[in-house]
Every structure is written in structure tokens, then in C-alpha cells.
Length: 168
Image 1 (cartoon, rainbow, N blue to C red):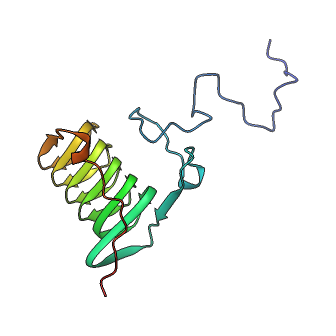
Image 2 (cartoon, rainbow, N blue to C red):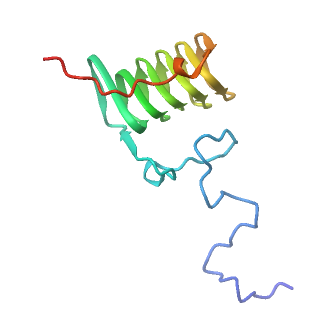
């Protein structure tokens, strides 16, 4: 009854029972389930590329407009406007300016307007500005101060992905 089981090596910690403990695969970033994990940037599962503005990066200046043709994750600080297909503001990320994307996922701080077909504010989100959306999800614990309006049609929330041209 209490004898050694040949499959249990006493030098190794016991494996948790099935259904208990962390999931072996990360939960998708769009999930709002308690205890959900998010894949790190290098483990992004979608076929599109991911650009990251790291925690140690700060971008500021007059008329800054960052445009990303695919996915952009902001873990640092940007004082300027962002446009992209998918923008993720990480927990340590801070954006002072407008954010416009097909999908906007906020876990950090945004001080400015947000436009997106699908906008998600996670529990750690801090948003001060208006939101124009087609679908909106606000998790319990998120802080939001502003107005919300559903877009009349998709063209109203479509991001401008044309790269800004340098003025000569």
C-alpha cells in the first residue's frame, strides 16, 4: 500500500494530478479566464510577424506616428500615435497618443483615444480616452475613463496603415 512505485522516482518531484496546476500550453492572449497565461512574444502562434517595443525603449517627439503592418507589442513607452493590424499594449507598456488597429489588446496604460474593430481591456488596463469599436470587452479590474461609441460601419475603425512620408 505505501510501498515504492517503480514509476515514481523519489528524487523527482511528483507530477500534479491531471486537471490540476498550470496548463502545458499557454492560453491565447485574447482570453479573460483567471490564471490564464500569455505566450511570450517569441512564441506567438499566428503566422504574422510580431514587432516588440521593449521595456527599456522610450519613443517621443513631435508628430510621432508608428505604423506596423502586422502585430506590434508595446512594453515600453511611446508618446505618439500608433497604427497597425494588431496592437498589444503590455502590462508595462504606456502609450500617450491615439491607438488605431483592427485588434487592440490593452494590458498596460493608454492615455488617448482607441479605435478598433475589436478592443479588449484586461484587468491591468488603465485607459483615459474615448473608444470607438465594433466589439468591446472590458474585464473586471480594468480602469477606463472616457466615452465609448460603437462604430456605424467597419470603415470607421479601419486603421490607416500607409507609412507616413517624410516631409522634405
